[in-house]
Image (cartoon, rainbow, N blue to C red):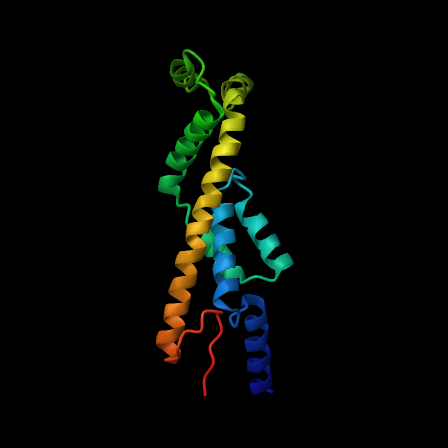
Length: 174
């Protein structure tokens, strides 16, 4: 009975995590996670990632690891840089007095309705640059993440299994 239970649990986790996926599919799962983690869907990364991983039958762990590559200490800089890049691509300029208005905003309480009204008015001209910049940046990072992850996975599998590389993500042994 215990052996049957262990085997059932092992098979469940193998199906859940897709541990026998090809390097292509595992790298794709990681790249999807990186895209979502750096996308403009701030706050929805995890739920979107898990949902898409299940729908596309991708490795859930690889998706989650990709999502959390966007660490708390780089997230503000990433979105500021990508919003600036989006503004540059779209020819949008920062409104006059923007920095002073932003500084003054934080003199208000977060619990006061006026804070949120002023914040929305302040951010509104940068909404499209934010969406465009962070989407393009996330797509570029996801592309790099795919190739780095695939190379790493293939090299690891060659090392572990001592098998020659055949270029298609599968190993053929004899």
